[in-house]
Image (cartoon, rainbow, N blue to C red):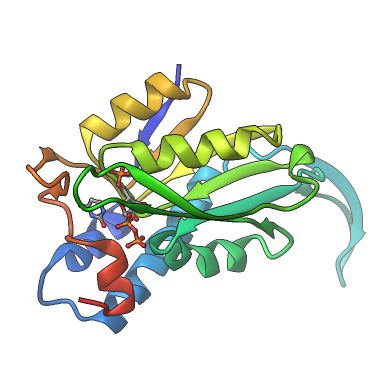
Length: 209
Ligand code: PRP
Ligand code: URA
């Protein structure tokens, strides 16, 4: 069964409060999404295996630790997931990047696929799917289905705000995928927006409202 981790770190919670605030403008919103993603990446990669390496500091030889050759891939769900990407790449510059384009139909709230480009060697990689919002769960479920066709080593889902409904749908559809979020909110409204949430993540990142 999926493990669901809600990050309660004070720095993440503080930044999330500013992110949610309706008075926060596009520039600051983008910066905060990035900063929260960077802190989440730090925790979500905690289980990467290490190997011992022999190095010399200017003072003495020593046995140090490096990541044991695990290859990662980051897959943002367009558009809003791209807001988390640069921060993840800052932490893990060697990761490859795939993109999955999905938008929610305004009437049915079901995801519609419009783009899909994944690294050719994704079958050798541990994948982190990025999307700030897990609402009904439809977009995450479809994106992960698309990625699974290429048989990656593992998949984790990183979002900033998750609705209980989305967590339930995603864990049922993909029980092998662990979920990391900064907050588990109360519910969805009649338009399938998260309450209290932060509004439309894509519009707030790109200033399109
Ligand atoms: C938002 C969000 C997720 C999706 C979540 O994207 O970034 O991808 O909705 O909703 P769900 O869990 O109910 O599927 P949206 O479809 O608004 O597209 P955008 O990122 O291009 O704005
Ligand atoms: N997508 C968003 O951007 N926000 C929500 O609350 C739900 C879906």
